[in-house]
Length: 266
Length: 314
Image (tube, rainbow over all chains, first blue to last red; front, side, top):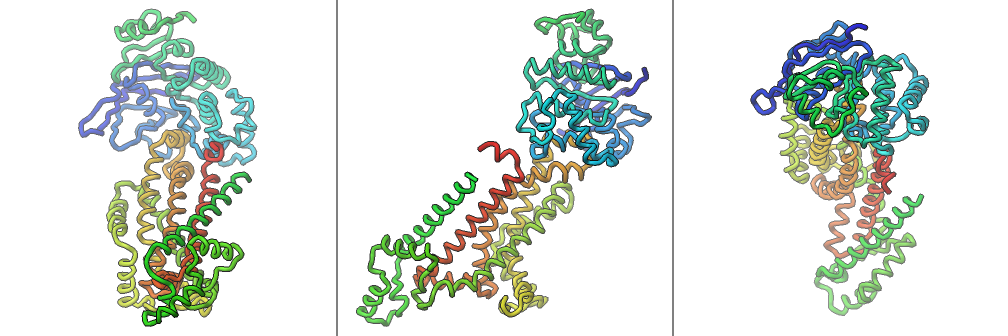
């Protein structure tokens, strides 16, 4: 297994209020092929910021980013936008915390699921695209795929919408899927289903997944490796079992102590 | 289907209410149609006799239903003043006013939609800032004044059109449309400014929504996000606004017709109001009301086509 993504010394600063505010300081991540890495931390710890930077979605003028995000021989922080866009949605996909608002309300589900194909693979014709979209909808557990293909987002529940988001993210068979708190807005049973789905995708397609969450028990269920962040810094990282079993950092200990019940060795 | 029936019923109710309001308004404001017709020199006997002939001595409600009954049968009555059928008086004027309103409307769409998109796309840029300032100025200037300015600048200095030289559509249609271009600009200018401002704001608001982030994550460039995702969402409120504008433009055209010497319905409407010539006023107002109602219906239908969420909620 080779390293597919190598992030070193990632540093993110905001300048929205006239003075620099550090969101992420010295973030490092080596993602192996087919691996699931969890990033945990409280709100404002910089975990989402790091993920957005990797996905190339932090591009406002008021943000400065330094460090390196190496993917496929390109540094995603410094490469031209065209190269970055050629990876987005095709090699690196992302799903978000808000399934209710992350889909375009006036476009049909099928159109949205197919969009990455439309952008990156214009050689695939309309009919084939539709076939692939329906197959993908079925693969994420939407059994009524034929009908859902023609529906609009408001006709679906939050859990279904998140499945649609996953289908749209996975249709180009990306190497990396970044999941930014994908289950936070969903209820507990749906959360478990989405986690199972991500596991299945990882196993069947070999997609590397960066799973961001503040829910340690979900991270424990899903991830082989975990990174713990606090105030923009990585405070601890390593095998999930090791980090959760014998945490070294005081912040990690506090986080683990704050969970009502954690099933280690699961 | 149920929706269409509901709409048609509410259209009819609206028309009845509008016509009744006009009738009541005329019975309240001072002024006697018989006196206006005969002139102040007429003898009181003659005025009384004319009033009786015109049926003005009946109670207002009787007069209303007499008029309304005839109207339903397609008879708009005779002008009090000129003793000719109203239909003949206004039918050849309506195309003039309507053409001008439609030209202003098309002009508004053609100019403001691209401009709204461009200013939103380059928010804070030089063009955006210039347009914002110019918009403020244009919105503050009433159409009759910009009409005078346009007449002065384009008619008298650059001689691009001949002020007062209206050409009838039955004579020369191209010349007719050509003459209406500048008046249409005068009507459209403040509407363009408003629509640009509204669309710009709408695009900027939509561009901040979560789904645009999703769109970028799929590899869309700025134009892809703007035209494939944001635009349709941003146009939804603008469609409603444009619907309201069309009605407003017909009213705006009436003022501008006076400035540019266009013999549309405005001249008849104004003289008929001052002459208390109810049948003519009623007919024109019913016509305008009908246009407004039909426009609203169209806007409603377009709205439902564009926004999939509307149909479901009812």
